[in-house]
Amino acid sequence: MSTVHTATGSIDSSELGRTLIHEHVFVMGTEHQQNYGDWDEQARVADAVSRLDELKALGIDSIMDPTVLGLGRYVPRIQEIATQTDLTIVLATGLYTYNEIPFQFHYTGPGLLFDVPEPLTELFVKDLTQGIADTGVRAAFLKCAIEEQGLTPGVERVMRAVGQAHVQTGAPITVHTNPHTQSGLVVQRVLREEGVDLGKVVLGHCGDSTDLDYLTSLADAGSMLGMDRFGLDILLPFEERVSTVVELVRRGYADRIGLAHDASCFIDWFDAEAKEQAVPRWNYRHISEDVIPALLERGVSEVDLETMLVTNPRRQFE
Ligand SMILES: [Zn+2]
Image (cartoon, rainbow, N blue to C red):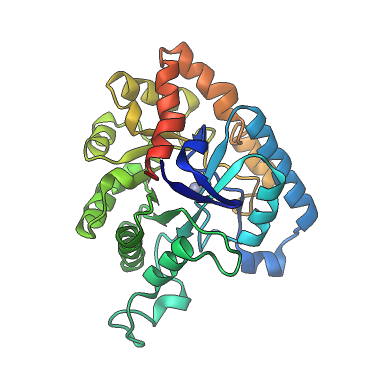
């Protein structure tokens, strides 16, 4: 039992229910949208509410939304949506980059032109302990990323700030990783150096890999594996995603797995029609409609499903 901050206030961790550990509501470049975007605020909010309602009707109670700086986080809009749906939305703080740090932090920080304590850590801790901007909404977890480019100076600075904010607050961490470059191992090393409890770390996008040696070594070090891109069949087909989860469960790793799609109601990274053609099942419904039935059919038990959907997400906050 412990408190989890959500977009509509605090709940007890036992109230999270069935939770998808990595879903966005909106992913966008705010500056791009302001200059080139075609954005209908009312329509987008209504669309999000109906999609989240649909997800709730399919039996999912909560999502963890790791939309942070770099992905277009705008909490007042999420707050408005959250008050209109029964689905619980848990928000994050952090910064999403594969390369450099944004210019807002480029010259300011330890050893830089303006030599001050790490401003990223201060902002993350403020979001977790006081609230995001003046919304009164507190972030409940931390997010950063590492991609093919590896541990660039910018990526490392963000990751260490995330680790320090975790040490100060106890908030769990989700990291976007690229399993094909085994970057989960880099994440575990850096966060361990910062004193992070690896049991509070989700290594996101592990589900893009079928490399069981890699995946079990990460899980053996305590981290949760994000099998969190169901529907992105273009990166790894459905059958292989399902088989990997089935095999991990068979080997006793159900307590190290979290499920999600990494989907969104709107993302400006791709043309909407091209996306629909390329990844037609990349939406909030796929796990409930296709993945859970497939897992059950392949021998995953209801108890294992409960572990992956309820117990593991909840444990991160306890
Ligand atoms: Zn994501």
